[in-house]
Structures are given as C-alpha cells and as structure tokens.
Image (tube, rainbow, N blue to C red; front, side, top):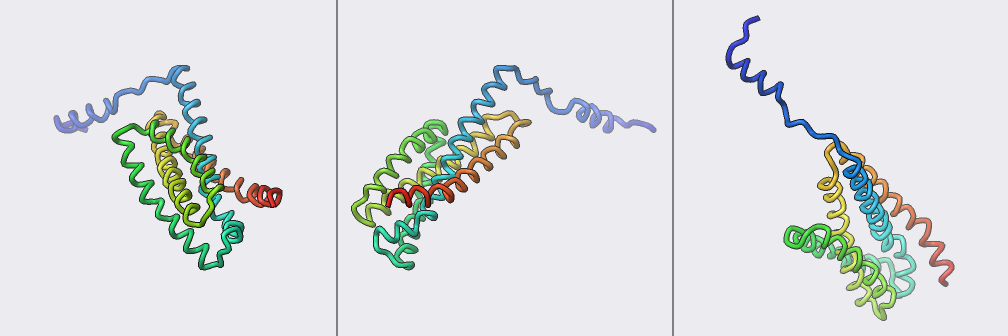
Length: 185
C-alpha cells in the first residue's frame, strides 16, 4: 500500500486528534460533586414546585368557589408565566446564570407565601404567575449549569441526576399534597 502525501497529512491530523484532556484532580472531582448536589437539590424543589398547582387544583377550586371552567381559566392565566421565564432566562446572559438562579430560588417561597395569603383569585393568579416564571427560569438555568459546569465525561450523569430529582420532586408532591391539605382542613 502506497501512502500519498494527502493521506499522510490526513493520517497525521487524525492521529493527533483533540488535545488530551488532563485527568481531573481531587479538587475538581469534589467541586463537580458539590455542583451536582446543589443543582440536584434545586431541581428536586423545582420538580415539587412544578407539580403543586396541578395537584392542588381541587382545593384551590374549592377555596375560590370555582367550577371546572373557572379553575381551567385560572390555570390558563398562570401559564402566561412562560413569558416571564423567557425574560428571566434572557437576563442570564447579562447578569450571570448563578445570580439569576439564586435569585429565582430565593424569590419562589416568597411568591408561594403571597399566593397562600391571597385574599382574591386575581392576587393568587398574579403570585402564581410570578412564581412559575421563577420556576421556569431556574429549571432552565439548572439544566444548562449542569452542562456548563461539569466536565464532558460527567455531563450525562449530571443531567440524569437532575432529571431524576425533578421527577422525584413531582412525585413527592402527589403524595404529600393530599396529606398536607387533609391535616390543614
């Protein structure tokens, strides 16, 4: 087999390949695990938060004296939160992902407190819309942070842990909400 100059150049490029990745040190590995843990805990809460409104809708309808069309209309208004999530997600590029994520996570319980104390359906809808704007932006930021912060070989594991956490958070809502509401009334 004769190797032509073009083949030699191609094989030289192929043999070099990408620059070798240095093995992560213990400090990198500890930081990676801490990052995954923090984001996974946030995603567990996000999964819980995403499921609250749907799971609690029978009790919300009862408290605000809504029929099926009334609760459907209220939830439709809350779905406008996607616009807020989009705006917050765009702010990430200007002020930083961590800052927006922490701000959203910090504001979410305050919005839920406002919704819980709402004297009217309109106030409840406003607080829930703001709340779900924060949930959407924080969920998007969490997923992206897992990809950005982790080395390539750990990204799939990080994403799977995040997805599992969101699923468990949502499942937790389904089991806890009836118990909490039953003990409340």
